[in-house]
Image (cartoon, rainbow, N blue to C red; front, top):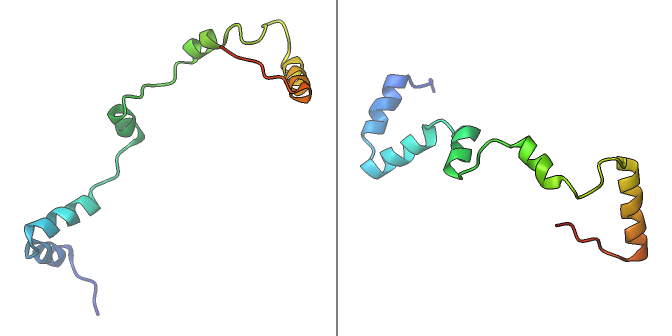
Length: 85
């Protein structure tokens, strides 16, 4: 069996019922880009500065990440839960 040419496939597709032609067209459409999906969902680019401002005050800036991890471990061991705004 030989591989059909594009013209043969096109002619065969034209013989399909309209509903099947639409289903076939949907299958061969290129997938949406991440940008298109994000736009449809109303999602914009990540705003790093805004995230930093929102996180300000969660942990004192002058204390290290190691101190933060140690505090979380301590709170877990004590069974306390710290509320973060």
